[in-house]
Image (cartoon, rainbow, N blue to C red; front, side):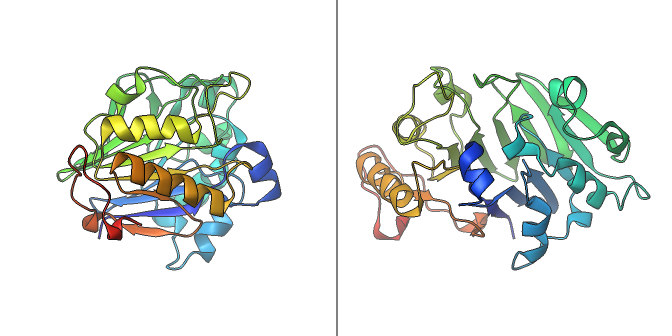
Length: 272
């Protein structure tokens, strides 16, 4: 089963510091590999208490999109767990250079516990496991070195637009994906004080890219569950692309995604 587990849907400092939503990141299961993206504070606890439980010692790759706390707070703990405290070095650690060197969010001693380190760069491509390819098409506008990503395996392509201020290059960078995740931290975006996307930006991406399904996540305090779901439903209605607001603990079966909508087609009753 190919799947996506949301160990947390919190975005930015206040949602994380209050744990209004959890901040464990997401875990992909693709091609037999387990790939953990952005384990923020409490990630290890969320994994171990998840149903079904995610065993950190069986994680094959840890990907950090940038060095902010809500994306990397438990990064060293995950590396220790996946390598059995360094006594069984294994797995891949992928992160921007500034997250491993300038201000290491994985402690330097623990970086030696993985079998391979990959530096994320604009236009980069890495095979995280046999047949599982990670691409970072674009450097995002987020104050520190930040990359969204695409994952491809067995005819399935997924994209995750990580934290950023709006960039006109975003739709092309994530074009053609079957599943689109958008970090939707605010109700409205394009405010350079925050460098985060809003629900209006998410709608622009969904309307242009037209994936088989779009998922909003990484919500700040402006988008509690009811408002986040209302925003997703509005995007779904206006674009015809099934759009869902992620929730903590949700497990998505990637082998049961809806068909790609046609332009002008309304989202069906099963979209939500």
